[in-house]
Picture 1 (cartoon, rainbow, N blue to C red):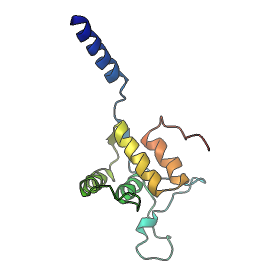
Picture 2: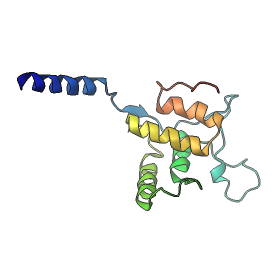
Picture 3: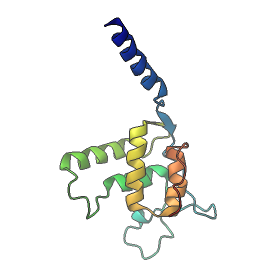
Picture 4: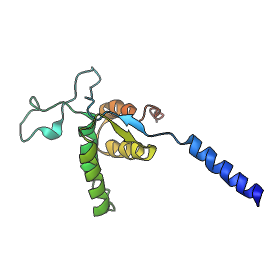
Amino acid sequence: MRLLSAVCISVLFSFSAQAEPPRNVDMTTILTDENDQPIKDEFERRGALDCSKCPDLTLGAAVTHALFFIGQDERDVTPEQKWAWAAWAMEIRKSNSVKLTNAEGDLLYKRLGKLYGGVVLMRAIPLIDPNRKPPEIK
């Protein structure tokens, strides 16, 4: 029995030692395009034909748009989940110091990938998780 207890404690300790601590992320970081020019936040167009007066797209704004967006293929997302994502988005969107767990980083990776193209992902994902590398080209 003592051996089994010792093994269980050892296994639990090794898992907790491997878990990464939450990462500190600055949601006020302005995302830039492939030419290092600020990307405009086209969701803030407000009826204008062009985006000349649109603010620059921050990581927080991109994350907020991604958490608010529910695609046609996501009919199974419950009202409770939509509400939770929206409340969290409003909480973190303008913060210069958000602590993200791996699970939260994974959620943001998936949500951003549903809404945005490669340039935003290329800039946003390393800010959310510097350890994540681009996937293999297929």
